[in-house]
Length: 609
Image 1 (tube, rainbow, N blue to C red):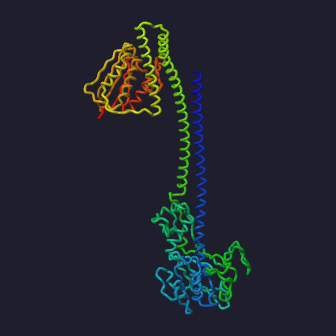
Image 2 (image 1 turned 90 degrees about the vertical axis):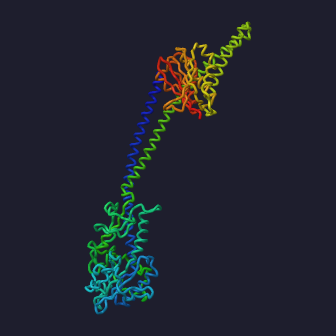
């Protein structure tokens, strides 16, 4: 008893320790996944900001490359303005890597009498020709805005992005006097207009940039748009076919693409003052002195890059008008927000971790349950070995004693010889029955029990089983009653297996119903929920089955507490074999019992059709 108590306490302690360990691991898993989620969100937020900055700088660099191909030339030193810019346009179309970004080139040229002429570059003739201003240029077609002098201050070396028409503007400058130097002493000689290719930007350029900085092998991770931040927002470009205003209000990141600030290219920065004609400090955004006073390429000047800039030239500053200054790059994760996307990943990782812990806990529980079952099965097997050994010893001893008496001549009368022969036959049958039960049980465990189901008449099967056990019923003084309904239909079963089931149930009644010395075998058709079945019941008036034993009586090797206390002979396999055989043949075995009033075991078999 003390060993069992220690074993139980040890099992309980192990369960408590393992459960506590699983709870601690679950808490740590939650904390670790939460920390990893926050770190992942910060990392992706930083990567998103880096991608937006790179998107903007890439756009600015490519536009600066467009503008750099048409860097300011000092008008009046060489050829006419048409010749100079025609040469630039021709060089651009021949050698630039960004030629798809530009749709057309235009000039507003100031005539000597002060009037302006609109010129369009013709790539067929490689020259500018006077044409009517296309309506798509909008207010850029109104020369009245130019007659008062184009506001070029701050654009000596820079360009302005006209947001409405998607065009780049740059003033044509000339010295204010023959002795003047331009810049800074310049007057407006017209306006250069580079019309950007809107279709290329919207259908090719922006999608490629979005894929480069916000996509992967599976496509875009984010919804990307370029929006005018007016109310409601106007989308210049969107990766979504139908962008919604919520894309702007709930964006994961926004950044302005252009600045509207205007500063003269010759103005020193406030933090970098200069005196007189002192050279500009390092980092000042502007060209070296005299950059535009160099002779053109045909006169032996410095060679130009394919875009038209002199080697060593500087990035071109780009400013925006009021419309383009409102353009923002808007980025939002496809799951609604970056935070939500990280939360989804966090929940998935947490569930996977907790699932692994649950599987681990379930595995440990199964190990504990199966270990207890194995211990229980080992105990039942030991009881079985003990019981079978005892059961086998008795008939073997009787047979050996009778055989020795016959061999030694102790028995000499014919009547005694017959008596001894009957005794040996009885014990031999008993021994054969026990061996048959053990073999049958082994066959069912190895799944070798095969049954040939066929229509079987119930009444002859019952009569055969009663006849086979008649010697036992008479020896135990039992009264056997049979009650079989007339015209009982046959059942689908194996004839031999059905007979063994009945014999097992009758043997059980003889063994445990000896107090009443009465047994009844009834067969009737089922009704209600049991319709379509034939019910065969074996009933006794013995001591009945204890309530705590009732759920376990069909388990192999199990013997009730009363049977163990009275040291009844048996292996504990009869009821188990009867139940398994009945179920294997498509039937079932049920039991009802009342303590002190007996038990009734009922076989349910389907009617043969």
